[in-house]
Length: 498
Ligand code: NAD
Image 1 (cartoon, rainbow, N blue to C red):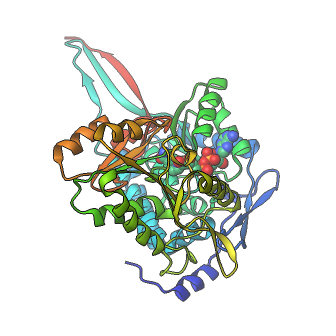
Image 2: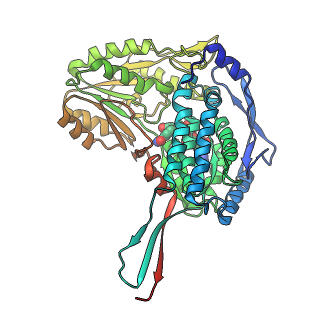
């Protein structure tokens, strides 16, 4: 439990040193071109550090280092128990550097440092530990072929895994990919989002300290259309794990077709529905969680519960409860433990959110929020915002806003609620609030999404797969299912004399 004051966090932030170079083959290096870009703190516009602007040349070097490491077996053929020990040490090192890891994400992309230090950074350590422990507990198969033949069916690492990640949970998204891919014995080349590369670079350094051999875990910061595309098109990358927007997920599928048919695992956008039925007895908890479901992490959550469907008989009372909660969640300095929401990742994203809000003002009923907010006259902050009486076909209810903007829609029947919830190009997650068990099971069954949370929101754990359906993509992070995507099935036949 970390209990630091605002001034403690500020003085720790002032004392931080940032690693901005790429991490390739076990060393921090400049981009071959020598170019850099600025990493900016969205809470106040200050430049944190210059970061290496990697492009195709750097990606080539990182992939070559990953390939060399894979082929000589320094990690890929290490005994599973030994790989486990290294990854467990990495989990310990993340815990030992918890406040630093939390600060890196908070400063880089604006999330509350109290969330980063209680959710993101411990989550990263936990996920590394979970996959470390799995390495020597997953067995392969012997096929029932009969006498004279021994057919072994084993899961083998794929080779070099490219990972391209977004900025909303920088450390955790890097971890979800790297922990499983490394545990399976692959080499990894990670391209973090250009808005938030700092925690991934520090993670690579901690991995090396834990004993991950040179070349096995590389980080190439840079832009999507250069470094990201180079990884997607690379002829020697075997698998590309992507988390980000649906449009870029589709591009990675094309890159694969244009290059070497690498496996692509897209985990993309969402517009998750939250269905509140009048037979839910604890509407206060439902309102607490509905507010959390959209305002946590400034609404920059792929599975954010951004469409709220409420049974008409309780809708007005429920919206009143939500307004009270939203008004208690005003944004503030991300390093101040009393702040309830942090900063939006950058100016571009802030302006994109405000465009939706401005259009919404003309087409729906704004009941709270709807404006930018500034801390000491600066920063990218947006008030928690709720629109009521949103029509089902309004862009507010259809498009992924990726900000703290909730659309409320009334429904009159279970069928209508399910129909509206499913009428979306996305299918990442959904929540259902009811005390009627049969209804909970029936509705959960009919929702076309990757995860349904009943009487809670956004439930997830290392033990359960996370990912979507429809245009939310088909990759799955977490659980042993994620290990499957970083391995190939190999059959080995052995003839013997009976
Ligand atoms: P984004 O798609 O713009 O960027 C994601 C990554 O792709 C970044 O590293 C970026 O540099 C790279 N990229 C961008 N253009 C590229 C190109 N032309 N070629 C190759 N790479 C490119 O997404 P974002 O704005 O960083 O993140 C927000 C999105 O991520 C939202 O849509 C959100 O729903 C999604 N997301 C999904 C999940 C999930 O598990 N399904 C989790 C978190 C975020």
